[in-house]
Length: 512
Image 1 (cartoon, rainbow, N blue to C red):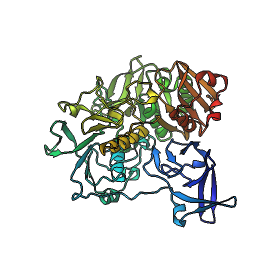
Image 2 (image 1 turned 30 degrees about the horizontal axis):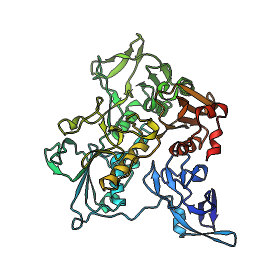
Image 3 (image 1 turned 120 degrees about the vertical axis):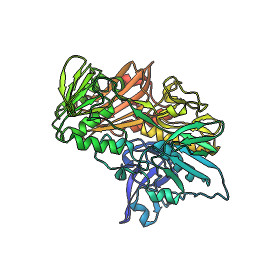
């Protein structure tokens, strides 16, 4: 595949597949505009090199996420050995192709589809319902003040406003007749009577329901934990408050995983000091392994971030006005602090399902089948869903990734319409700190070995996570589009064995 100019008006991505057939599609990913020519081509799909979004090379349709929109597709003609591309001039100036969406037509379809939640899974479901031709009523109820927004940006840019993060405009929801009830909490669900109960005690009858309520940040219940200046991050308002209160202050972050480390990177040059408290020896140990964790810790330390490892917070301290002044660690060390941010994990927001008729897992997740189905006319998606895919090796799991949530919502919508589409995806996530991006694909829980290619300490590497002689996940920094190509191989079950990777860590390139 190659990016080629079309006259003086722009460029397209020209692709020749294994059969020798040509196709031409938009050259940029519809998510953040990454050049698809630098992505991964596998069979009839191209994957974005940055975040793994997947597009059909024949239709331009988005088939895996992130992002919501497809990309343009152009007509190709071969004549006397030359390739001709036909397109409209205005199509070359956009990275997105918006389909014609259906609208609410109660005279043709009186069904009501109710979506509980306003995050990526909820939006993807509503969006897909209209793309797939649903003409009934769609209601989306969210506790938040804002329309659905780009949640991964919260911890990377705390000062971002809800409006700047919005994934679809208010006009979009109006034009497609998707009713978004903001600041509207569902407090009860009864799957026998097909009703949801709102916080104002109003009751809405549905024909099909999607539960996509996401998760709640964990908080600490210890001495002083009610002090002013202790924050969690879930909404744009939370991020704005943290950014405002932290400016020029002493900041402590509890938790050394992705949220905590991204916040530390964002605040490092804006505050008096940043300290990170972690229970493990290095950040990300359980997910990425100690060697990568140590390299990322060193990067943070070079920017002035301090680390306190293998410890936890014993108590918080406040002044007479209950303003945070510091905290004491379990190892006895006292750290002055004006602001503390808790990044210690999340719990599924499923308390309201008590008495609903749905059986939850012991940790409060909602088990679903391959169609994201919970029970008759009941579906679940996103952080709260417990599901199984090929990558999880038969294990029922919950994965709080943005890409997974978008895919869940898409699949749930299709099955709410009776299309019987099974979930088939490979998890893909990313993080960015101090301008350095890390990408990860697969499901690496329980890995027993990591094989590296490249320079981990120099932040230019590929890491292969191995379990039972199988590569179950991969991570990279400075080696795009390696992870996107590996994701494509994992999805097609074509990834080389661990033995092959040990002998030649780049052997997978021959499989594409």
